[in-house]
Length: 185
Length: 194
Image 1: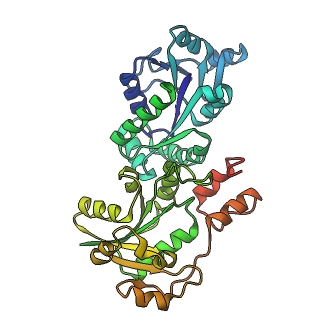
Image 2 (image 1 turned 45 degrees about the vertical axis):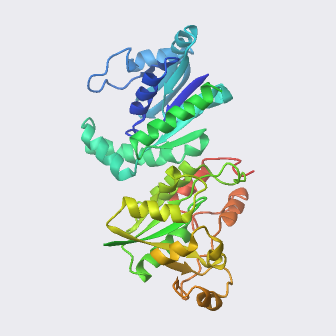
Image 3 (image 1 turned 90 degrees about the horizontal axis):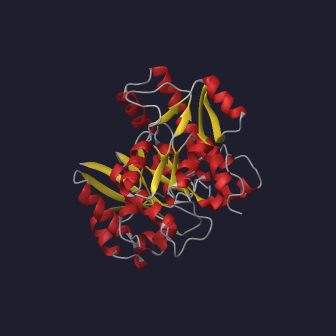
């Protein structure tokens, strides 16, 4: 079984995924590969595998990805097959944190072996505020992200479940119950 | 005190009729705000046509985000089921102590209002605003519930979820009857409601 979480940037998905990982010992985070630069204290091999565009392209040619997506121009994210194998060998369930469209690809691959959860952000205003507070993006980048967030919300129906992250504690409770219903059935 | 009208419904999905009606009532009745209270799913009762409650809430919330005086709430999701209106009103009054709540209902509900759970308490403690639906005889109903404010002149915003589903199935144009976010969502999903 695999779990995957998709959300517009700033929806609080990482916080929810971290919470879930801390609550259950049968889950393991599937580290995505990306060509974007590390933010803040991010470390290669922990939050992401940070690859150069050339390296990423080579791996696409070698068919090393389960899925990949160009999220912004020149900015790729993807899931390496080697990463999923690493987790399966330990008999853990892989937890994917992927782009909305990447999420749809994975759902097509895994079918009902996957639980697909869409984390909806609080209102666009609050999302904008959060991105500003995070302080890692320029104003133009924030506008770009907000437009993308609206676009991404229009894919919410493709997921098995939607969690609206208006209230973090409620969202945590809901996510824990959802995952338990799926994995412990 | 702040005056807020509670417009409860399934909003499956929210459409321009809901929004126009909520805005009309807000202005006509001198309310500071109208809150669209999205009702939860009932696993025992729901037919296949009811969308997920979180999705219905997200759509309603985003659709009214830029409209003055309107907001969507999912307050009912955390209340005990079955979800009775009086429980919603009591819980809201306890939570928002600086607010006076009014209940907004359609005339179809006025017709059966005396079958509602604790309907007398609702009438005693809350302002009840009625908007016309269908061809209900509002004069007769008004005599039965003189405390209710019936908006005789309110325009009828005749859009129904059934109509939306039908247009969706026949790939009709939804742009005039649903907000932009709902239109996009439906455009991105095939084979819904089939």
